[in-house]
Length: 358
Image 1 (cartoon, rainbow, N blue to C red):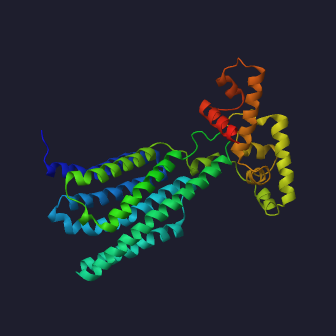
Image 2 (spheres, one colour):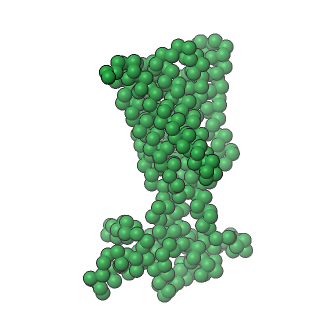
Image 3 (cartoon, rainbow, N blue to C red):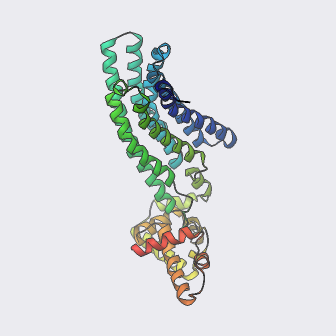
């Protein structure tokens, strides 16, 4: 069977829409089964993207009966997708960004989308063109702002994990970081295409093939990564020990001298009892042993010792592993890694490489 241009055009125009619709359904099932808020956020993003690409499909297949109906929803969804993706990242890394911040991110969409809707309903052609230009400018700003803020959130989360767990394997959001980097790259294409306008993109299957396949692949990756049970802020909150309010009050009076003293206590504890050999060591373990607050311990390690909790503990583990290797050169690397406190060989090798660079 030989496909003609119309069939190829329909396939390329519908591909991103079908990918988003598939993941909307999968994430809905995930949310019903798991009741995880983060899945709901990504589901809303995917549902909005489905509507957005439905508008693309209507436009590029010249479905005249739906053109007028699809135009306004397309403009609004186009302004919603990036802020919604940022809300998803915020839920992953911070447990949400708060009502005020959410409102600020959505406000430009409400203003520009509202203006476009009003001018469209009132038949104000000249004003509608200005509203359309405003929508495109806001979209371009949103893309850059969301990518920058998203990276900032992911980096903050990475530092939080490194300052809470000695073993960060499986507890990072590297897949989301990779997706956001890809999103940043493809966003440049979005900005260019958005400023140029859909009317200037050729209405042939070959003309749509590259952007359609590229965005479909990216959206599939976002859906697949989100479908996985990623470690998130909620998992850190569940792992945290109950905070002693009296210690929290004492933290307000913390001085550099007290921080120095606590850092010395941490050093004595780690070296004398070799607690770095404990698998899945957490900063709360040290805080409980010293009868203090985990945030106080974290500040002492960061400010006085000058590294994250994870790096601090893993340096001791690497030194211990090297000592074991010298004493027993025939001991398998996997046994050395386990005895040194590492949960996996990948974590062992990664920290070995890091130590070699220092």
